[in-house]
Amino acid sequence: MSDKHAFLKELLRTGAPTGCERDVQEKIIKRYGEFAERIETDLHGNLYLGINTGAERSVMLAAHCDQIGFMVKHIDDKGFVFLDELGGIDKLTVPGCRVVIHSQGREVTGVIGKKATHEQSESERNKAPTLTDFWVDIGAKDGDEAKELVSVGDYVTYESRITELRNGRIGCPGMDDKAGLYAVLEALRSCSDRSLNVALWVVSTVQEEVGTRGAETAGFDVQPEVGIAVDVTNASDDPGNDKKTTPPCLLGSGPTISHGPNTNPEVERLLIKAARDNDIPYQTLPIADLESNDSKALQVAGSAVAAASIGIPNRNMHTQAEVCDLADIDAAARLLAEFVAGITDDTDFRPLGRILSNKASR
Image 1: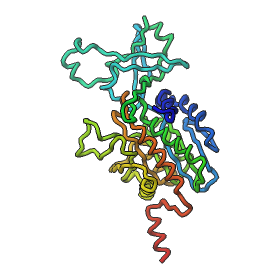
Image 2 (image 1 turned 90 degrees about the vertical axis):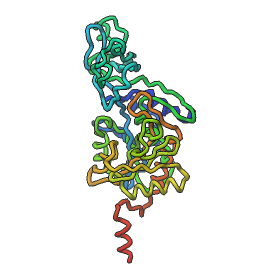
Image 3 (image 1 turned 135 degrees about the horizontal axis):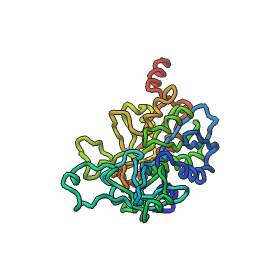
Image 4 (image 1 turned 180 degrees about the vertical axis):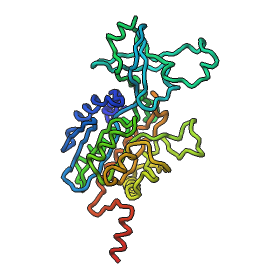
């Protein structure tokens, strides 16, 4: 990874399990605070960075800073640590992982163990695993030593090991949604020295992985006219996808622009225009249902928001081997900045706005 993406690397290496996002929010303030006119937070832990905040109209770019993880729920007398899940854990990928337990300001490393396969019965080998089948081994000699280091209720994340792959692609846990978070922050930086006709609020939201909770409260707080959620989206270009039912979503082909009932058609149209006018690669992603990211909460915040979603193609989502393409992340940041900068006083995001305007002018 180049120096250009140094802060993305820092984001990935900062654990932010759902409900424990303060460390990553603090780093965002230190790095991007200089580009914001206003910096605010709320009781939920969302972080708001605003520029041109005196404008009457506003756009909110949201990306969640939290990641899937675990919580310590039991420590036995032998010193083994047992976990509960935070967010949608892919349990098939859990055994053998390296994890970090965030305990009282220190990080305790461990590995996740399970009963050896040659000691399992056939029924044990064939059943779907649960977290009760696994434990964390921190190397403690007994329960007393383990309890000196970790406590019930401590947060746990996969070890943030970044693997640099070919063609500008990287693998790491937490790409969901550090990739989108980096994109909105870079859009803020780009817009900070441009003349805007709207207020721009970039919000690092919390607790998306347990139900878009941060975006729900942030949307009601900002009350934006336009709200765009930037998150990872499932790539379709690996062997695990059925091409007959999965919309094309390819790494390296640009971010996706959502299409469907969770997307305001005027926002979609202007995002596509911004991409075409500025030679930014993009992909259309049709979604027939409400999306499972922050845009779902933003769309119905207050008296309604013109919502859309930008997706960073991501392989192996919700595992410790999530893969994204740096070029897609950079393209998303450019697309967002050009979209915001392209909004004029005459831009109307109402789906029927142009129809009514044309009728009135006759």
